[in-house]
Image 1 (cartoon, rainbow, N blue to C red):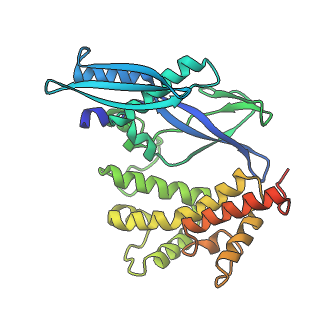
Image 2: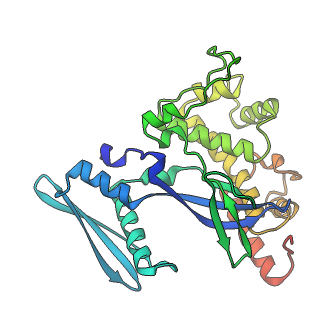
Length: 313
C-alpha cells in the first residue's frame, strides 16, 4: 500500500478546470483539480504487481462506465470498482479514462491528491510559458491559466528537494532564513492550508494581528511567531487552527462563486450571529463555523431565485 500511495512526479499530474468565476474586482478565476494520468497509474500497477499481476475491465452502467481493477495478491485476485459518467468530449474514451482513475483511487493510487488545498488560479488573456488554454463558451470566457505548484508533501522526495527555492547570491543562508522542513506529511498539509487561508484573506502581511488571532483561538498559546506555531504546535492544535480559519476563507470563496457582494455575505452572517458585530471578514474569525457557511449559501441561493439579491455584473 505504501508503494501504491506514494506521490507521483509533477509530470504525471494533470489539472482540469472545475469552476470558473469572476471576483468583485473583475478578475477571472478558475478552481482547478489535480489528477494522476492513466499512463502513470498503469506504470505504478506494473511496478507494484508486475505486468501480469493486475488487469482492468470496463462495462456500461446506467449511461456511465464502471472500471474494475483486479490485482493478484498472495495468489488471489482482489478487485475494486468505481465508475464515471461519459464526458462531453470523446464521451466513450473520456468515460474509460475517468472510470479507471476513480478505480485506481480505490487502491490508494493518487488518493493524496484529494487532500490538496483548494486551488484557485487566475485566468489571463496573454499566453505564458507553461500556461493551459481555457475556453468556456457558457460563461463567455477564454484565456490561459498556469497549473499550481504542488506542495512538497505531494511530491516524491527527490523532486520536493530539488524544487526548493535556492537563496539569491547575496542572501544569507543562516538557519533563521532557511524555510522550515516538516517531515510529517500531515503537518505539511495543515501548515500549507493555513498559509493559503491567511494569504487569501489578506492577513499574511499582518503578523501582529495573526498572533492575536491565534491567541484568541488558543488562549494557552506560548509560541511568539507563526513559524514557531508551525514548528512546535501539536497536530491537534494545527487541526484546530485550520478548522477555525477555514469557514471565514470559505465565505470569501462563496461571495466570488455566486458573484455577490461581500457585504451581502457579511449581512447574512450578522443575521446568524447577532450577538457579535460583523463588519468584515476579520470580525468573523472564531465566530463563524462551517454550518454558518452552509446556511449562508442557502440564503444566497434562495434570495437569488426570488430576486431579492443582486449579483455583481
